[in-house]
Structures are given as C-alpha cells and as structure tokens.
Amino acid sequence: MENILKYYEFSDFFKDNSNTFSGNTISYTTLNATHFLIFEKENNTYNLYVSKYQSKKDIGLKPPEILETVVVVLSHLM
Image (cartoon, rainbow, N blue to C red; front, side):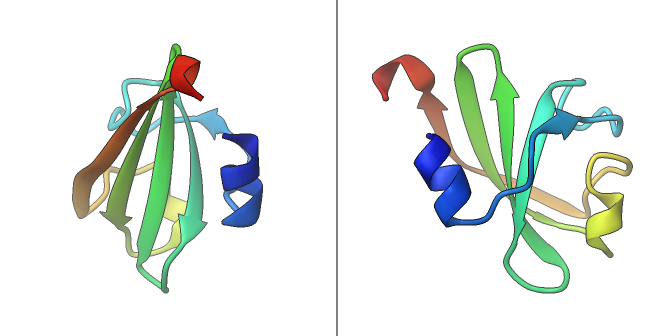
C-alpha cells in the first residue's frame, strides 16, 4: 500500500473534519483542478473514492460535490 501511495503522490493521511468520511483519516492525490482520488483509512480497510471539490483546500473540511466509491482494499490481503 505504501508504494501505491508514494507512486501516485498521495498526501499524508490526515483526519477528516467534513463528516464525509466519519472522522477517519484520509489521503488524496490530484487528478485535475477539481477532481481528486481519496483513500479513506478505516481500521484495516482502505476505501478509494473519486471526488469533486471546488479546491483541494476543501478536502477534509467540506463535503465533496461528487463522491463515488472506486474500490475497497482490505489491508490484510496486501
């Protein structure tokens, strides 16, 4: 998992304060100016989402305009 996060230049994990990810920690990488991939770390599970925000400064602070689940990865399988 660490190699994926580094290769795709995901941010460090930080606490979600937007109530979108239930206060879990999240990490993101930029696709373009308004679209982002977000990993949510929930216990031993990583949920990957594609999202839309007005600005990357809003991630973890405001709910996204769009949020769709891409994949769920159980860390014990890695």
